[in-house]
Length: 96
Image 1 (spheres, helix red, strand yellow):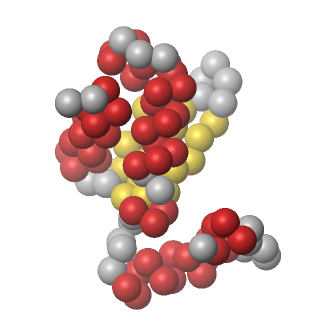
Image 2 (image 1 turned 45 degrees about the vertical axis):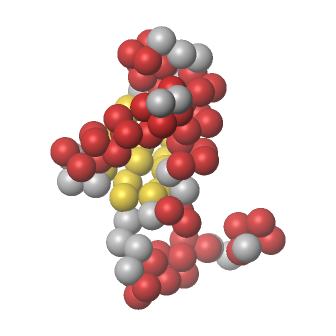
């Protein structure tokens, strides 16, 4: 199993145990898995997307964190989530 898969499974387990919301510190997680912090970014950027049912928020700096929320991906819940989060504009890539 690749390290990316292990990190993804770990985060999903945390989400299940925490009712769909988890807040982590990237550097601490990287230390836990003995990898570089960019590996954590890669996993979050590619496997925890809105299209897959997740909202990711982050704050950089010394007290920074990454917060992952699992969202309702039923047709109606997902559609309303998209409408509420578009704001006043959207990029072509996000729309696709």
